Structures are given as structure tokens and as C-alpha cells.
Length: 366
Image (cartoon, rainbow, N blue to C red; front, side):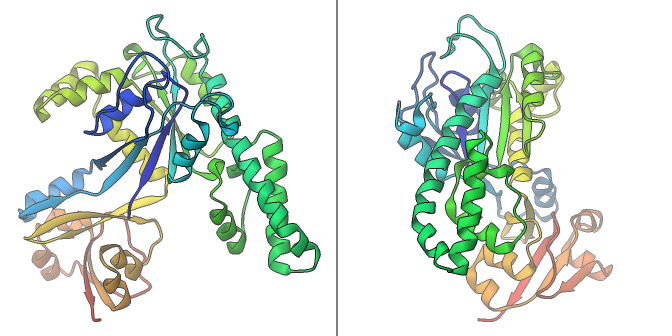
């Protein structure tokens, strides 16, 4: 399951620096607006200590972590929804992403120019929100024009779609994002997904602070917390410049020593990736054998056949059963065969809901 997150924000907030920390692809990080003209894309591995432990026990020929695709989208400006700057292109890039990582500048530095002259992360957030909301409003109004006549003529599906579109229109006109509209009926949820509204996407606010604020945050971060307290959003505090230093260290030991020196347990980018997983309601299961130990990404609540389908569609079509070992049991007894002997290997059917960390082996027939 591919996961694609778009990094957005005003110019000069630290987006490209953060992207450089996350990916081997190097975006230009310069002290002027629009230093990233085309969206840079990087594929990064998801840190998971469980994969390391399983590999230590199994000693496979190769280890395959799950991955996240990160898109560094060039800085949005006021008027982007009307095509200002490179607005249409940027908004199109956001539409293709599963989640938005909204970077906010929460540090003061006279040597780094702010596009609006003064550091104010709440104002910066509102600038981006407004552009996305205006674009969504345009999308909704165009869809209303398409279904209105059918809805008034008595078409039930068109009437349901029309009613939901009106709710979205009223919400967006109030300066609120589409994600604030509560949906309960499955058909409404399905229709909403087909709209691909920008402000319906899960969002994480990434507060980029100076090194002194890395652990405790600062007044700018608190202002952001207050501003988003009623949103369904994640907040993460990170120091992009310091993360860049960590990323440049070659050995694992050097990174551990650096983190210990500054009082952190793990790099902020690791927390960012894990938070992105939580934001998208994702979890991981594993397959473990002498050929390969591998992590697979699925949606929480997914049943065994659908989880098998992530490996190959034939696995889902011909699903017979899943043999499941819990991660804690595998760690305790050391191998699948030992877990089987201890009665810790369960045989599950089509209705089994996969748990985070399950080690699975699928039986299928096509």
C-alpha cells in the first residue's frame, strides 16, 4: 500500500530542509521564495524496531521495510487558488497526496527572510487554509451545477449528492475546512472521497522550531496548538536544521551519540513518519522467512484476505486461511516453529481482523 504525503507551507518555512532530512533526493534549500519549482519526490523507509528484531531472529537473506513517498511541494502564496505564483500546479500536486504535512515556521531568525516580513505561524496557517478552501469551494460549486437539475427532478442519488455538496459549500464559505463536516452514511463517505477535496485530507502541522525549543516548544508552538485545538489534526514539533545535521551523520552510533547529547531519544523525522501513519489510520504486519523479512502497510480494521491482497491480488482472490503469530510471542519463543510447538500459531479465516505487528503466512489457491 503506497503512502504519499505532501509537504506544504509558505516559502522559507523549512519545507525543503525537512524534505532533505527525509529523503535521499536533495531539494534545493535556499534563502529565497520559490527555490523549489518542481515538486521533488523521495521514497523513504519507515522506521520500525520490530522489523530489526525479527531480522535478528530469522537472519533472512534480505530485509524489506515499508516505505512512504514524500512530495516537496513548492511554497504556496496568497492567490494560489486563482493561479497566483504557480498556484494551479501546486494545488494539483496536493490533490494527488493522501495526507498533508503543513510546515509552519515557529522560529525567529533575522537572517532567514519571511515572505510576509514577520514570523506568525497562525497567520501562515490561515493563508494556506484559505487558498485550499477557495479551491475546494470552486470544485464544490462546479459539481453543484452538474447535479442540481437532476436533484430537483427527483433523482434520489443526485438529491443526496446535492444535499452533501450544499453542506460543503456552506462550511467552506464560513472559512472552515471540508474535514469539519461530519459524515455518517457510507454512501456520503464514498461520494466525499470521489470529490478529492483538498481540505478533506488528513493534516499534520509540523512546527519548525529552533534548537533551544526542540524539547519544550515555544510561544509560537503554543499559538498553533490553540489555533488548531478544534481540528482533527496532529501537531509535531521538529527542528529541521538539527535534523539535517543528524541526517548527514554516517554511522548509527554517531546518530545515537548526537541525540543523547541534545537529550532526544530518536530523530524527529522518525516521529514524523510514525505520526503520518497514525494520521492515515495505518498499521503494519510482517512476513518472516529465511528468504525475506518484510513489513507491509495496511489500513486498520482490514481483514485477512484484504491484507493478503496487499502482497498480490491472487492471494486475496484465492484466500484459504492465514497462519498468524503475534509479535510478542515470536519474540519470546524465537521462531515460527517454536511458536507452533507452544500453541501460539493461530489459524484464522476470512473474517479475521489483522492486528498491528502480526506475523502472517497466507494459504491460497488460484
